[in-house]
Image (cartoon, rainbow, N blue to C red; front, top):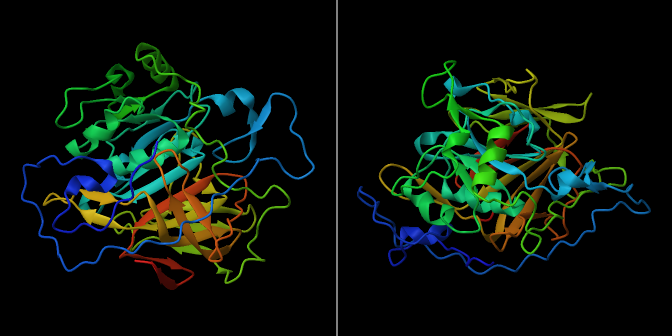
Length: 388
């Protein structure tokens, strides 16, 4: 299904236009919006990426497919099963997270209070013994989640979340009701522990989620009418070190301290493994289950237009767009890119400046969605959004 593009908020538009929600009057004073802000001009539509996900001259063995999340070879049963999109905190007192290292794709984006939050897209989750701790969702995460046709796992959220999460095509399991609703589907999937204080001690497991999916009649296999399995454009023929990319530059240290000022998230390239190591609070970010630091083959910086919704600081992000920019980082190099997303289930696609699709390396991907008036730092140089 398609969702109309959202534009810069002006006096005649309601807050609900952002992220597809109808207006609901919050119990706080609305912010004053500068009505001199100009509506973004229409941009050239980015070309669609078509890929068959099969390396040149190679056929997969029977029963095997390329993972939609990582491009790596998986059992066909994993390929056909829906992943989970689970909301995880970055708060210092909430660390470490359990199961986060299983994420094929990990998003990090700002929420209110100058704090970021994470959404982990995890396939083959059914037998994971401990997942969490789990925190609340925001509506803009839902539109990124829908690209993967997942079951969304969260612990409620503000009333801005209510409309999209109540859609019949948005299957979710929640530990508590969304503000302004009485619905908490699958809340028995969660339990609390004594290792952390509330709200940082709510957990679940693959078995508990499976049980609630059964109770809620959620289909565990993909909706092939909506789901686009060929999400990222992978380079299977020797990989992509960006040596042929115009304008590429060194990227061994990536700081997101100005994008996510509380957590000071960052990534450091390890040339021995070819992976980027993820840090929080200037320390290794680890999975509590394994004790291992999070690592990624691919790093995507996605600048996005946003608005502050109310006096409480709730944000809205423009998930659907075709003119914003960012950076693709891999193998110790970075290159400027553009991104586009034109529908709820449409994958966010990334392109070089000449509008040819970037070729990513098979493996895990970290996506930082950054407010377009903030900057990132790569190898000591500040980079800002060029297409605000």
